[in-house]
Image (cartoon, rainbow over all chains, first blue to last red; front, side):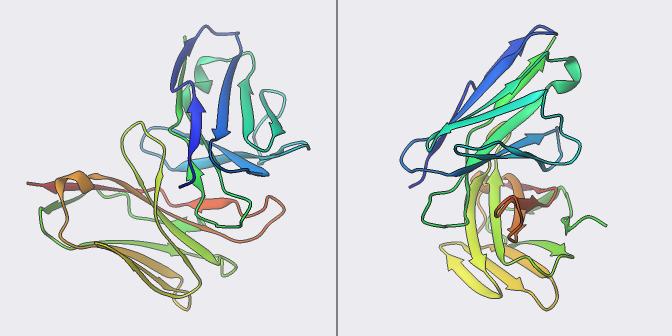
Amino acid sequence: GAVVSQHPSWVICKSGTSVKIECRSLDFQATTMFWYRQFPKQSLMLMATSNEGSKATYEQGVEKDKFLINHASLTLSTLTVTSAHPEDSSFYICSAAPLTGTYGYTFGSGTRLTVV
Amino acid sequence: QKEVEQDPGPLSVPEGAIVSLNCTYSNSAFQYFMWYRQYSRKGPELLMYTYSSGNKEDGRFTAQVDKSSKYISLFIRDSQPSDSATYLCAMSAYSNSGYALNFGKGTSLLVTP
């Protein structure tokens, strides 16, 4: 089945530094990947849609200069949290779907970011 | 009003019970409906997805969609302690972002032995 790998699963960083999170589709190609953020006991909030070979589409209220997204190939999208602050601490999850058009998107295992 | 409403629970049932989980929505353009299971500190796992109205069964799980009422359900038969998790409904319609998912808040389910 479709597998999405996300790395790292857990990261602690100092305030002001940048963190890169990788999302890979292991056994399928994905022109579109989605990045979500989830706070404790809350639902997933879509941050941006990552399109292979073009600029990402950000949801309203998401700072594009703070959350840099690069979708360089059909199997890899990265999210970089720049100049991280404690309020950026959250659970970040990516998802993707095969090109064949199934709309049951597969999710990565998530990255727990803690900024200290 | 949020586009997708889901009672967060928690919902506690004894092992073997039939569990009913529900979501309502307001956007009549939604065409694809999904149920995900999420364990603590893990990514959501797709359980079921359906297109438009109707029923779909997979093992102990049955998904129902009633587009006229804007109401979807997930039934779990013979519930097991391993079913204890948060269940998220999700739905989508085409937009400039493609088929981005709109999630409910999730219902926390606890199945007690």
